[in-house]
Amino acid sequence: MKLRYLLGFLCISCSSSSDDTINSQENDPIEISDTEDTDTSAHGLYFPPLDNSTWETVTPSQLNWNTTAIADLESYLDATNTKAFIILKNGKIALESYFQGNDATNNHPWFSAGKTLTAYTIGIAQKEGYLNIHDASSDYLGAGWTAMTSEQETAIQIQNQLNMTAGGDYTNLELNCTDPECLTFHAPAGDEWYYYNAFYTLLHDVVSNAIDMDHDEYFNTKLRNPIGMDGAWLSIGYNRFYFSTARSMARFGLLNLNKGVWESQELLNPSFFDAMTESSQSLNPAYGYLWWLNGKDSYRLPGDTASFSGKLIPNAPDDLIAGLGANDKKLYVVPSLDLVIVRLGDAAETDLLGPSGYDNTLWEKIMALIN
Image (cartoon, rainbow, N blue to C red):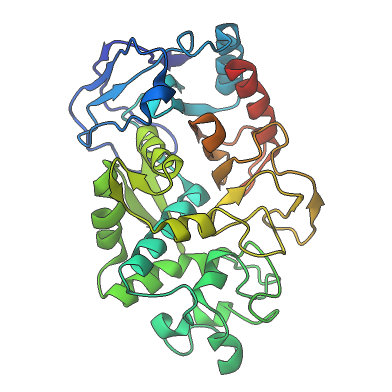
């Protein structure tokens, strides 16, 4: 069963779902205002107000999309355990669908799609002069944050944590463990790409120690609140996951569509945004700073040391950048098409980290709609 919002005024009450851990703090009705504008691109990007109560729409028919493909797309989403799905065109909602009893007030885990939020937070801290990604991580985590030798440990820079080249021993079965004894040596920093979660997680401590402020407080002040997001970071075991509504993920996607600028407020330096969303190393060209990149000649996947030829998502536009979380949490940003797409819910088929075959099939359905 799906619930789709395209036009009109809707009052939505909170409900629960299996992957919800926190409830929405928004108690006000969510208003979606219609727009008669048939050429949204001529007026630049639309940014919804920060109070999250109103979000303008543009209909698929106004965009000259293939509206006959909507039913097939939504049927596929419903059949693949989707709970929330949003398409923004130039910032306006073109399609918003909810399934399995969910609505716009439900919170969902981002899982590793939330790594993109951490990359932003690091970039903001660098912009404000608290750190530099070429600094040794030990400058902020202290000596002995790993079980490596002093020389091996001090060679690890913040950028290695951002691009998965810290060099930890990935044969360790506790890849989420951030305790020093878990972080042993495999290769010199920068010499090997492996999706090692613990080194990423410690970036939260890097931020906290660099600015002498709680990471979450800094994140809320510098990123969440300025773009009107809701949600919170939660600690689950060694991991830290972000939970929010689908619309908050869409807001973050819109920020990226505008290259780190919300309306006229620049949150990131343009140079950092460009570096974050380009190949960060040659070992896995499909990976930036915690962002997945399409259109490259090869890619590597979490849990694997092999390199695969071809594009990460062949059916998607080459300039797509993505936050991809376990069990098919998806944030797609496509600058060439002025699109932001959010998919939240449970795994479509198999529980996997980050990219999955679902990406390519889903994009086949999306392209049938927008072409």
